[in-house]
Length: 161
Image 1 (cartoon, rainbow, N blue to C red):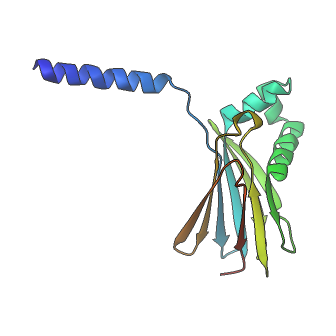
Image 2: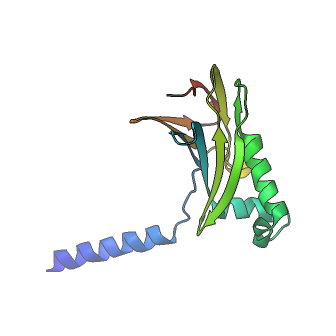
């Protein structure tokens, strides 16, 4: 009985400590073929906390993100840090969605006839030592890439499947 109580106390302590820790929001980008639109859907998932931290560093309040200027700033931020080059078209911006503690940014990319270079640097400047994740889904296969400092680019083919 004493041992069971000790284990329960230990687990509660671990859970309490884990709940108070700051979650690290690792940017996740996904690229997936949409057969209906005959294009690649590019979706970025960012931590709202990290986005707000960057906005506060600019001297703005969190409410800034709900304005047209705030959405334009966020779009520019992503456009400068997630770059697709080498194809005949750049990603087309579709929209931004806020969902509790996550920001979703949507793009569409037409199929390319040649290899594309994808550069991902969505980590915020103060957290450059962390990483970005990219998943490319091709039919049933998922290719995962980790972008770190010094390794920010891949070359891949995003033609129509």
